[in-house]
Amino acid sequence: MIKKPSPAYALSLCLLGCGLVASAAHAADSDWKRGRIYYRQVCTACHTAELKKPIAPNDRTQAEWAAYLKADKHGKGKDTVKHYFSSQYRDSIKAKNAAAAKYANLPEKDLIEDVRAFLHKSAKDGDSPAGCS
Image (tube, rainbow, N blue to C red; front, side, top):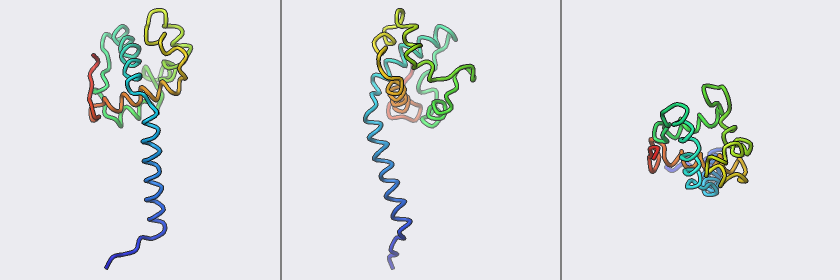
């Protein structure tokens, strides 16, 4: 006997489907290639200069990168991740950093989403795990 799904079950499936479509649409709006350029030329350059060790996208899983970005804590909580995407930060380094200069006028939110898309794709468990080069 085939059971007819309850209205609550049908609604939850519908909401899940809508969420997946919205998530896919949001991901499609992000430019992972632009995120890759910014990550490699800004994030990796700074980590290499300051810590003498870059942090590769494939050092973490997708879930770990998502949690890191959501927590918005950089440098063991000394500052925020968002600071490094701010127009003020990009303006402060654009004379020495081509990517910061190139994306100087890009909205912070767009740049963060681009890097998020790159990290998702390039994470240890992503479609194309990537190192720092």
